[in-house]
Image (cartoon, rainbow over all chains, first blue to last red; front, side, top):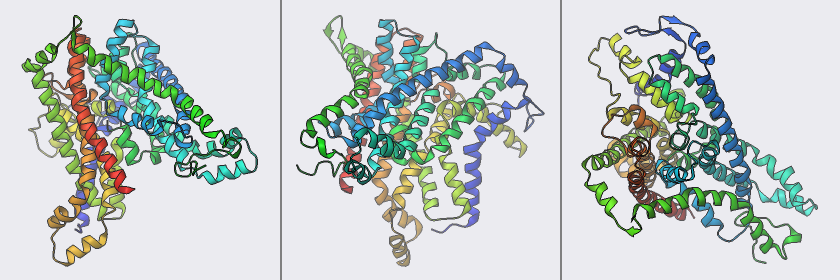
Length: 266
Length: 296
């Protein structure tokens, strides 16, 4: 099954076009001042639309709303999930396997359908369009990353080190802060990043539970993408996506097949 | 005290071991209570409430809403379109990924590294970004059309706002997962088995169908289930790239709830989608459990 380098080259070029072509188009648009049919590339370049975007409150407000929503939801989820992950990894209690398993099973529920059920309840309670209502629902997107990645990380820390510290008389808290936590830190940070990005770009609950009072950044992007001036949506795309892609790249070690299977797939 | 925690990694410091289990159990339950509570209040309760509500009309048990659902031609067309989209996109994404994984398994060097990197790129691109990017790339007068016209092809017809649009986006998004899963599976097929077969005169297709595919069956099934569930529940991709009709189920639900203000029908649509998804999900979990038992 040996292939010639030529075959590999064809695969490489076609994949490069298919995978990068769409994103390259958006980046070109973000820096184009004039790009008219049938020119292959923009005929005039510049940052005109970047400056135009930042002068507008209708653009700034959704970005700030999204950052606030996402930070609050992700941090709260971390505060309640990380200790739980430690418990799942290190403590024995009745129902441990079943409860841990329920976090995978929860992923099999189609999210949009679930948000319909929540939206109907929120409609009755008058919580639709409420900032805190959206925060609580968006936390759901974080729970999986925040339980699974840290649980695996805490399990991966060899108990021998902690036991040695106990034997020398260290308290449980001291062992946790000085030994367990530093070793789990990269995984905790990665789970935070993955959860943060997935909430930042979350459309489904923002639309069903936040709109029209709460406009988040992805909802703004949807509105802008339907408008005539192409550059505005392109600028927003580049502005938001590039920092997130860098963050994700830094935590790519934790985006294993298993993690993705559980997180992104369903 | 029997092996406290050696298999599960649990630790009980010496001084708590005598009364340890009770204390540890309490601490454990207390620590997991909040996230479990979140699942109960935001997933379990709304789902149970919704399923019950769809069967109750003025306090009486009735399946009329489901009859209405399955008797409506447009609704049935949407459901069918959703399932077909999931099936076709998942199969095509798996076929392409399997090809990439095979290439990566049997080649090395800089080109293979680049192809591996490119195949994982969609992991870093959220749905909303790729949907918009595909509109600009494949849409009317998009970069792809401009490139084709440069080489003299002028009959490009855009897939934007046709079923091909979301199909392409779903395939694009679902390359990384099977490439990772299948690469892991293929790396366990020994070179010896392949070489032995080749020495005995087996051609590439025969090696593929008789050695590689049988060993990959479980990985392929798991990947298929995950991709299929993801696609039939997707909203952003069909909303931004798909035709106005037929609609995929999530878009249909959004319009039923948001524009038609008909929460009752929207809930029935949601329950039908949940049932289909849970059948596939149950199958996925059964396969996962079986394979982890096989490992043990």
